[in-house]
Length: 313
Image 1 (spheres, rainbow, N blue to C red):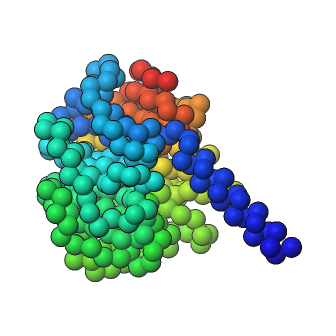
Image 2: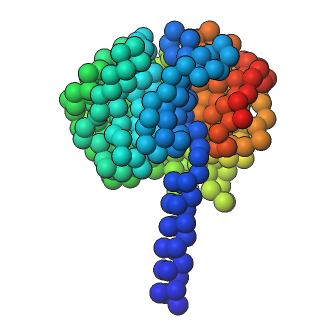
């Protein structure tokens, strides 16, 4: 009986892995700092760049299998790309010159967490072996340390004003740029993985989103800068894949079973229904439009009241 149960678990895991590889999902999206372009990535073998006005294709880059997250540089026409299940390494791509710099030292299993610091001087990557790596804008690895354990890092976010990092996996962890662990927080009593994090531009609080499971709902949680829980919200029917603040810091957009827009106190302001799960979400520079990408390869442009403007299905 034990042997049969083990075989069932192995077969289920193999099936899940195969479905994850073959399912064409648009995992991530980001809006350029100049507001002109939108980047979309997933396991479609391509990083796609669209014009923001009409969502027409502008440029594309071949990247094998899965792009897990893309992050535009805060001021330059440069994109950081993290990958997994791919023959192509995570990289920094200059859209003006088409130069691609591969990032060395990352786990062969890839990475999910990636973020520029507020000046764009440093790029942090959190990989699937629980490593945190810090690079220069030229792709030079300057620091590498572990996230307490080898569990894959789901997301990583720089403090908006200081060179400190926050990672989310099984816990919320704070590090300085030298790799010293400043604090570790268990976000709920249940063993539920965290998926996303977004610091508010003030640096006085941040928000996390977790996976949930069959028994426990996914939580959107507001925390003060010291890691004190301010509020937990459990209205979503799906995990919170990505979170992002508008440029003013007045509204938070979340991607899950719907597009939801929240204020700084965790009050739901607007909600836009989606026929499938949303994975990527990003605001434009003006804060009047939002782009989402989804599990079924839908790209939707919304206004700041979560009303649809345009869709590519």
